[in-house]
Image (tube, one colour):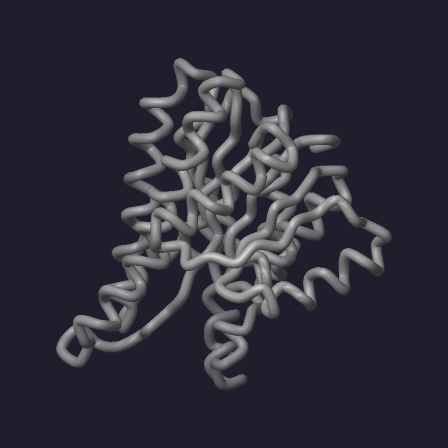
Length: 246
């Protein structure tokens, strides 16, 4: 589905980002992966080796800094001459109640989770316009749809991602560039792995499908949105949460 497509994936070192990278590799894409440190991508690289996949480039960037974002996109263009797919997945949490949340906790989450989406989209738009095609997939969260106690900063960043994506979809549709959003529910990642087992069991009780999601559940949807199978979809938010917020 993605053979010879060039894809930039941010936050590709673990969890959902890593699963997306592996799914894209299996589909034959050419990958440019970004993380805050190259060393963080070594585990993903080892999994590529297990798949005998070698068409990838590892890059390091502070995703909230325009120059470093531009550098990642330039490396993709210098290597492959185009960018077909952008997956904005980089994200962090700094959970706290509003009354206790620091300005630094707010700023860091908004910079990494939301500002990065703007910066990478801006950097990729020009080459995509020249190509007259592209697919941008932004990873939001159910927290951005319904809110969540103790996550005002995270929910704001993810709700902002949805609003940004809908605006971008309207702007870029005439250039044949599609912009869609995936909003995961509770997924087995390092973020959710910090939760006590009892809390995870309580969460499952509120999920109609009765389980915590796997990163691959999200990756499969991202592959669909990146491919021509979703060619008539833009500005959409696909909630992948086992039915949790029905």
